[in-house]
Length: 380
Ligand SMILES: *Cc1c(COP(=O)(O)O)cnc(C)c1O
Image (cartoon, rainbow, N blue to C red; front, side, top):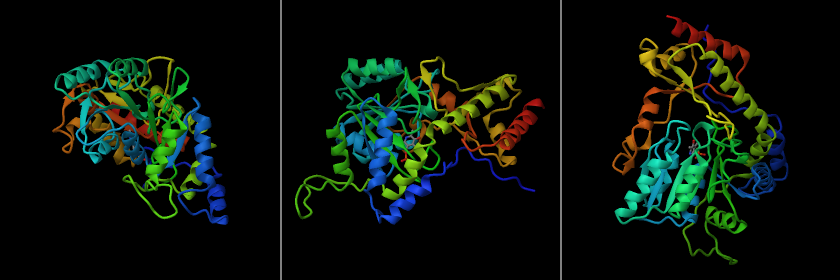
């Protein structure tokens, strides 16, 4: 008998999503505006705190695109971006005809290294093109070194676009991720910590900036009875149907974070006696991670040659999904021609790292299957 597949991260409904979606049908709000969109934005604003403003959009990628526009990025500008991330952090830089400048990670948070960042800024300024924006990422829900990275950005007076797509519910010194940058970004794609089937959000510090984002997101319509446009527009608003799913998901967000963190604790326990394997964990109490994906590093020199690919294939044979870490952007065929500053930390993480099933909907039976598969491989 083939056992059901254990996914890396799959949608997990709370129960009330259908109620909100049904309300949208009953009131015929089948549009990219309506009570669920407003309600979802309110829920997110209350959850994130800091008096922030949230605009619900069709994807996290759209939010990054609009965020770069709001921060004034234009063709020919340079934008610094953490190399160790999903391609959606970097693609919108190219949509705008700007140039991505990739920066390495540091080993504690796997996120942008403040030292490599400063080296990159100094060198770009020397070459005559001061970077306009820095795109930072909280990889797998682990906050980056906020104080150090923001100190560098402030020193050179460069704004931060905080890609918090993987980090809804994570926090640093008690402040929620997504509220640190000049602009923050969330994603509600199907594999994220909560989902609207597809969707995203932009987080701003002022109402004016949120309104400006929503203006661009709804085709940049000027104030006129006819359709009048003075700027390029986009069709990036979230539908009232999808926002209904989001409202239901917000009711269970904190519970789902607890469950993801329990998955992380399960892996810490599972690998504690297996030498050569380390579970990616925050280095101090000031970092609170949602552990969207639990991930490990495997050093084949300490495991009798078992590397991340050996483990991935052993899990796959048991119908258990796992995946290598994000392949750094400066190694991607589409991005390798752009400048990169670093010291091979991201390369090393990519070589040794594996993301493991992390969903909030995994059961004791699933955990047992994972545990047996792992122990069988490592006891040989
Ligand atoms: C998922 C993700 C995005 C993109 O979000 P979408 O909603 O899928 O467009 C951007 N950045 C990171 C780091 C992500 O993980």
